Length: 406
Image: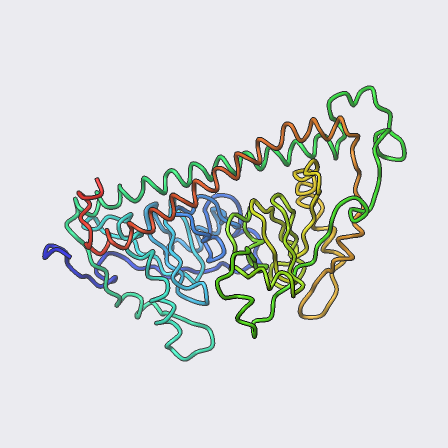
């Protein structure tokens, strides 16, 4: 680190704001005007462009002292998601789990964002050291943390270099979202509203077009319940080469990398089964119950995941889009007390319509390239993040001069 870098307390950087939540009992406080950021909105993106909930003008008036301008840097400071960082892209609010820095003109907000990004583990450790059940880093302790800054022009150069990666990632993410929405809209048009090419000349028989079949999904496609090899057997986990995922991965839009690797021996002597690329995955229990994803790699999964695939790979995209459409009705069959779950047999018995072969082949011809593009963009984002994350700690610590990267 150059001598020109200086350390500052977070309190020295500008105004620190702890968020608040309006009373949920008053629906007038919520609307569409202002993003309301919570830890669940912090999914790895740089900017809080969209959030699960928004505040109305009435809600904004109630919390006017907590209003955050664009370019504020919000940090999760309560719970096991502590240390997540995000930037506001327009006037916004947060809940009480976030402390937000509104930096003054001596500090670049983007550089501050990147400086805090690699410190998640450190913040979680500090919050856990309080001895309370839920990790917490209060405003006072948060404000007392140190951050190192170079001169402002160097801050901006470093931030610009790293932002170039995030700009590409966010552009790709927007394209992915559009492609996903296009595929789902096409599915609904053809297979919910039955406005597929040539539908005018096809009569309806018992609620489906003539020539289509109504079947249980398990009668037509392969259903696989995952399994976890014994953790007490090192030979199942040491130097593995077979991808294996836990149910948390099903939160991801596509599976492009495993949670862990297991051995061939584990695959042969446990309930884990290898599923092909373009298998639809459904999380069947716990916090991820009802999540749906699609594999872009061959992988096995744990026992909280059911996979559905077409061995001929003709209906792969169709199966995924079906479950995205109907998953809420499938989850209605969940049972259990504190831990709700569905089972393989519930998935197996889901009734679906199988279109005529000419229709499904046309559908696959359109959707497969869309899904290929989504996978390609996700791989690009994966590589962009890896490169950015290699550079980031070196640049924000001064270990590498930004001129060397340029």
